[in-house]
Length: 123
Image (tube, rainbow, N blue to C red):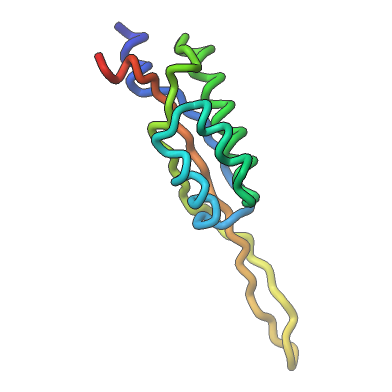
């Protein structure tokens, strides 16, 4: 019973404080949402974005969590949730004319990937 309840929740992997804007990471996360595990690994390889490597590593990590902790088969997994939230900013100052400083905000984000099994959701 407890194992079924865990599999409904699914396995997840998250990365925090990624030095990238949330909108740029969201481009890739929206593409893999709802895809199978194999398709979620292959499709970011053909996209020319920096976020593709991070998202594919998170998919691998979530699949390893699903098979190790919940005992789910990797061939039955799909991406049930791919969430990207903006995080804090690195604040820097750029020197400008007449001794002024101009603020530069370098964004960071949090990425969370959740995988579920197709067989468990049908029951």
